[in-house]
Length: 619
Image (cartoon, rainbow, N blue to C red; front, side, top):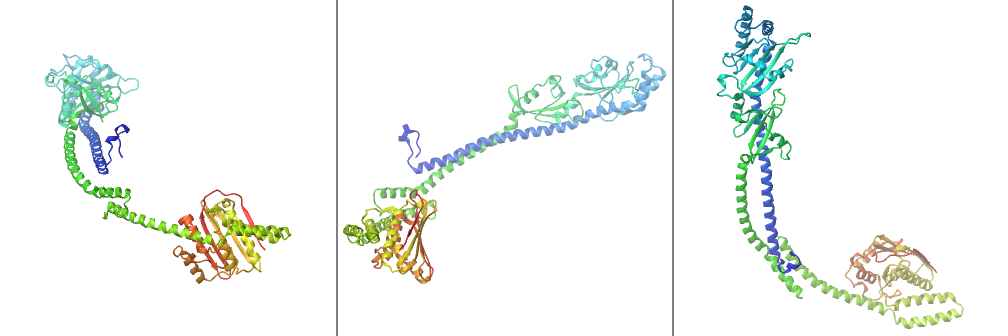
């Protein structure tokens, strides 16, 4: 029963149908809601990862174009530095005195070689501004002099950093305001690289020329516009300063959001001006120290499609749930109808009417439950009748035992008087025989249903003494009782018929040995074995005896056995033990003709036992 606290007991749910309905609805509704939430979260993460992955792929594509451009600029520097003719010409010109108003023949002739090389080098390929400036002020360009005065390069502050770079390394000043007259209107920024050419002799590493290659920054950000639609892409230097951007207003500013992303758990998301962006970065594959491409994608744009899908899925599940709920109500009412009927039958049975039946049948669990319930009622009726019959048989068996006692009180008193007179005349052996008989009679008048096993064994020993007195030849009783079963409670006189059968039918009232053993077979099972060394029986007689024991209760003990001390036969003992201990009691009979008979009983253990006892009875 589902209760909402003890104070709300009036609102408890007592109907199984209502409980089943609520549980079914909860089992469908809760997983559906959890699925929607998890689906939304996982899908958003997947979309975010896909957007970041797409942005990185775009950056890799842009990187290819940007790196090619930067490599072309470096190629020009390397060519000028490696070309032997240019190297010799520039060194010769640097050793002369340069006057901008007047050139010497040597300067003009050697300068023509340099100008020819420059024009040939930049005639094809991408548009670049190439400038060679000598320390003496002489310069060479691939553009008209009115565009820009190259001599000003010697006064630029970034030239001092270029002086500290050696070999094939170049210095990248980064993005600078455009210096070329024809480009200032269209392209406010330019990207420049400079290399100082030095003498390679060990005693002279002086600079003999500066090579400066410049392109417009717009060439870089046009790659962004063409290849990264819907994304904000920029080129940053090692200090996260913007080198190239589609919005010229951002060039030269610091991009602080990259460091912000590195310090947040969600490293792929940054917030700028109240808007969340997915951020991706990719280092430039060209070997420029620390330059990288960064992409910003509005998070809302990335998840717009998934939001629409989520809304459609939610509406679909809502409609599906309503339809399912209606079908569930109809199905549950049909499925629980037999249970309601079974409940009504149970109420009638509780009132005492065992004749009512549910008549519910079917191949499912409820049908089998109805059939089992009806069968249970049938078995209850049969059990009531069987218990009545069992009690009657038990009373009949007890009556048979009482009939065999033949006024035991009177006999007990007479025997005691005789024993005292015999003992007074000095005949101790006869007195002991009478004492044994007196003990047997005492056991018959005791009103105890069960006795300790050691008392039953003592009774058997006394009985054996009496039987040896009446026989011509003496039989021996060997007793071996384990300590753990010594005090176990057992029915009275359940061993005497077995010993009697061993003496009369087994040993045929002749000399021999009867073995009585008792031990703990399992943790809660006692094994009692009676074995004789008599004549035994053949297989046919043994099978007939076994069938007699397995026959219907009460058939074997129909009449008294006149040959023994009492009229309680073997089957009577078997039935008494079965009624006392139930189905757990077992009796096993084995016999070999000429080798004796063994009767083994297995009795459920009830109490702790005490020390081991061994006895010997003989004549």
